[in-house]
Amino acid sequence: MSVIFTVALVVFLAIPEGVSTRDQGVNPRCLCITKEKKPIGRFIGTLEVTPANSHCEYMEIIATLKKDGQKVCLDPDAPWVKKVLEKKSAQQKNKP
Image: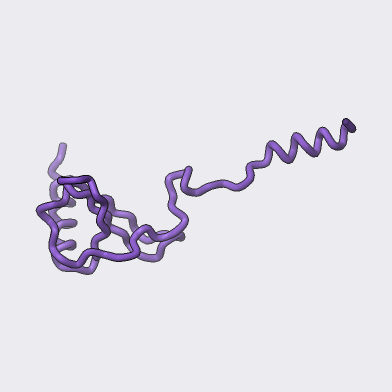
């Protein structure tokens, strides 16, 4: 093998094929296609709030249900969702 070919092969193998933003904890697009508008507050176990960013122009609120762990996107403009977020925020402020 020639030296030039060997160096080219090493450089080619050293350069990553592409950096996946998913591996870095960033999703390259919006996760929520449809959003739940009906009140399901009592079934929510946990909430994930993702602010708008360069990958998705909308704030996304993803609830994990207590019963089966299913993830449901919530409509951030729904009045009941705003109340749930306020309650969560108040609980986090009261934690030591």
